[in-house]
Length: 281
Image (cartoon, rainbow, N blue to C red; front, side):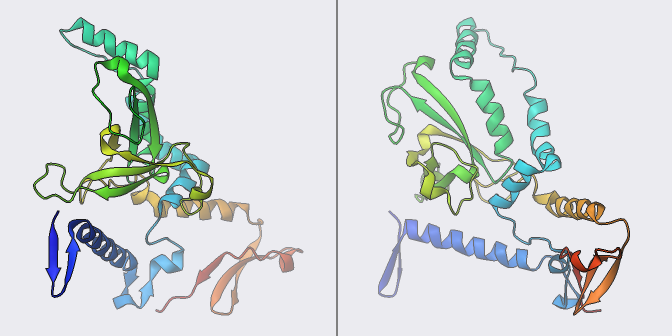
């Protein structure tokens, strides 16, 4: 175990890894807070336009579950990729037959497509492998063949938390997850509330296939598929709201904000709270 001393205090390797991770997160959040700032920070376009500077997993999941465009952005490429079952080529006919049998028994290709889709909602997804002869919270024992794989399950980031990391700098897995906390029942609930209704289990890394796309920093966190178009999805929401407004409407000034209101007979009851805030000129 790595021990770092500072005066009379000492910090073990795992604590140092946590401190580094928090420092990195703090730097990213600082950069996120500066998005949209112009005129030396006097004008904040992200705040004025209602954009989230640092979207969370639940934000992406909400758009995926309720937004037709968002769901297509995430699902289109994986569904095109897995439209037809993969063609297995090998000089070993036994191997080809074992793969086909495995797919028939545990729906292998189905879950591979699912993890390809749901890993794009957040920063990663996982495939969980259940094997014969050992509990799911234990390392798998000796496997004699494909028949020892009992089941495969796919989970998105909302059902999974990386609990510990490899901190041994001499290990080939340095910086990678060691254990995962998984809600075995899966969830589409908020990460903040899922613990009260979930079945959380600590699982070793040997039972997990970790899937992350467009990893740009670090080793295990990818880039959410919706991240680069998140503001455009918000714009489309606004366009839908404007289409729902009465045909005759005007913008009136209310305090320091401009508010869309109907000019019809029900104008007094038509404050939809849709505002465009003033910004420094």
